[in-house]
Image (tube, rainbow, N blue to C red; front, side, top):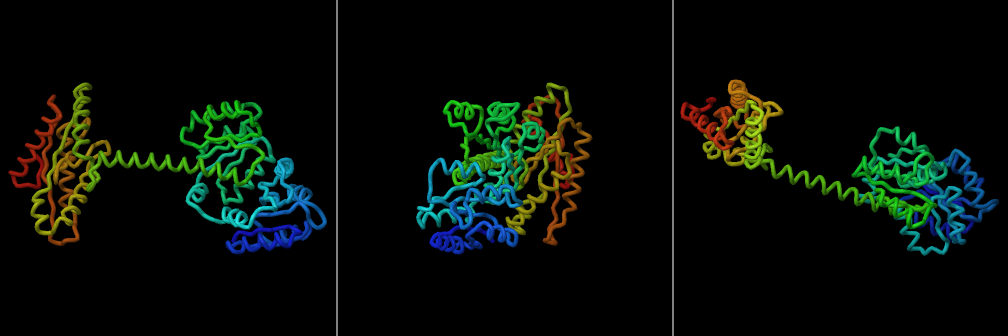
Length: 419
């Protein structure tokens, strides 16, 4: 359960936050002063601290400083204040706060804020699985980023405070967060090198510089986004999630394109190569054999009496036979050999750099393996016949036709044999 420690003198705001957090399944722990807050931290697990600036026996500034020098400095701290100015926000962020909530926030806005902390969405779940590298020479900035990511349950992160350590890491990351101002090397140059090396990774520049030319150059160097310091948790996470959403969509498109390519060249039932692909591959292998004076052989197989199998056992069993025969044939040949479904129950195998005798040995091995397949249907027995041909300067089509004629010699001679 997500646990929140709230330090505040305001009874109204305590009730508002208690209702918001408890209604969303969180453990809400109220406190009024720093001493009590540290006692709670010693005795209970706390995932996030909410602190007002005006406290009983102290103030928020002092509390943040004490947290930063304590063993609890890894717990994210969010400041709540009625004083909402850019100067005050920058002061709190500089002290290590990861977010700032004005006290004039409405009830609905509080609910929305709590929902963001507690809800689970697909992008957030995927983000937790991605590897992240953070490079910043400022220990304060690194700690703030660590707290923001930890608050959001993101732990698969490596943090670097020197360029040398960063460059010596051999791991490839899905997301890179890189400070623009670095000793030894400019962030702009580093981002340029990262983009050349990792074309599909998300690269986000982080900096306090808000000059448009600097930002433009960084983006032109290959960064996907630019996040300003001091960090605001909501903006920081929204920008990362937006980039991750694009990253995931592009990966999904790439995978679908690969799958479409596989579908084009593969037979939908047997997962062997398709007729069109086999013919194109035959053309390529014949040209290579002719050009480099290499051996080349092909085998044409046909399932014996396949129509009788379909008529007796049904087309569903017939499809199962095709799948098992295809799988058995593929396992009987080398990885470099190309197996495809040439027709209804016909399979073509291309054997690069193979002579006739060795091709016949492989074909015979496949024939014997198919003959020994045991099916659930006890009366079902399947055999194949084959024709083996060696390349002799004919065209791809002529070579396939030669193997096909030899296949039918096997059929005429009693089936379940290789010619």
